[in-house]
Structures are given as structure tokens and as C-alpha cells.
Image (tube, rainbow, N blue to C red; front, top):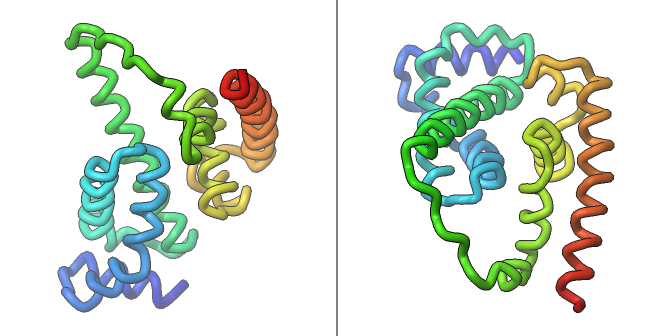
Length: 176
């Protein structure tokens, strides 16, 4: 942990070698997380870059109480929440789009799983993706979202239960 604190202090001072070390070790996991949450490559790349700019700006305040990975993931989740709020405001000012035909075609090649995850409530979706897809522990997720571990366990339970129901219904529709 001490090395991570020192690294972030050097990053905040603009040390290019430290910035490169941070990016080499943490860019891909943060990008993959955001790619799962956003499901758009370009937007995930943009938001990942924003996360590391925020981390560079706030690096001097990193205390090492949590792992650097947890701290960066928290920044990513907060940045994504902010992005979602901006998107919702934009949608209020735009006319609704026509539904796309052939949505059953999207069930091909694993899209059915992502479609199922999209149907979960946001808090369950986030818990499921962080735990079951990205391998964070319940304790790490609880620290990231500032909720008790029991709450995270409940969200995971309900997410898995709902996902089983949604995917079973989707599979029945495909087989008909």
C-alpha cells in the first residue's frame, strides 16, 4: 500500500514515469469495467481517460486506506454516474427515437446475457458486474459504493435471481 501512495503522489506531481506505470497497471481493468457498464467502446475509452485525469489531479489525496484498484474503481463508478445523469438530462430535451426492428437478432452471440443484465436495477447491475464479471470482493464493492456488505450481498442475490428469470424467459422466446 505504501508504494501505491508514493506512486500516486508522484503521479499528482506530473512524473511521467509514474503516470506510465499507473496506466500500464490499471488502465485495462478500468477500461474493461467501463466497457461492461457503458457497452460502447468509444464512450468507455473517453470515460477511462477522464478517470485517469481525475486520478492524476486527486492523486495527492490518495491515502492508501483502500487499495489503489478500489480507489480508481470508485472514481470510475462516480464518473459513470455523472455521465448517466448527463445522458438523462439530454434525453429530456430530445424527441423519443423509434424502436429498432429485429431486436430478437441481438440475442445472438452472448448479447442475451448483456440484455439480461441491462434489465436489472442499476444497483444490482453494478454489484453483479463488479463481483461476478470483474472479481471484486463484497467488501471491496461495499467500500466503493459506501454501503454495508450485507446490502451488497442482497443486491448480488437479487441480481442473480432476476437474471435467471430474465434469461429463462429470453431463451423461451428464442426457442419459439
